[in-house]
Length: 125
Image 1 (cartoon, helix red, strand yellow):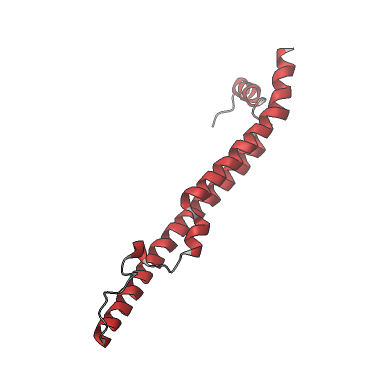
Image 2 (cartoon, rainbow, N blue to C red):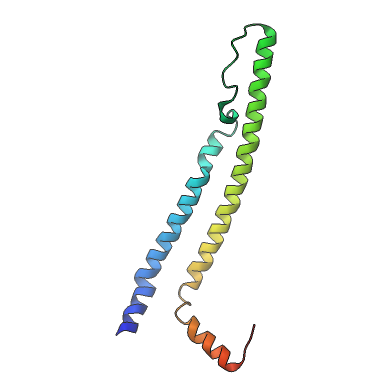
């Protein structure tokens, strides 16, 4: 009776909870890297440095403010692109690992028996 209850939980309730947990893990990883926010603010100034002008009204001051803002936006874009690449790589890794785990889930209860049989047969890795 205990084995039947375990198998019922494993293949019905456990599998569902496991996939929900993996989906939450993926959602948390996407939230951690803030991919949508990074895409929306890709060319925003880095940490808002030079977001506001120096207040100098001369042509020289305006040109200096323009290049300060431009440099700040370029640095911001480079940093955000690097974080985006790292986030996308991590999410792809998480998705592949999650798919492998979901596929392996039904096999796991039988795996100890298979390992014992292979050991008795003399199979080594």
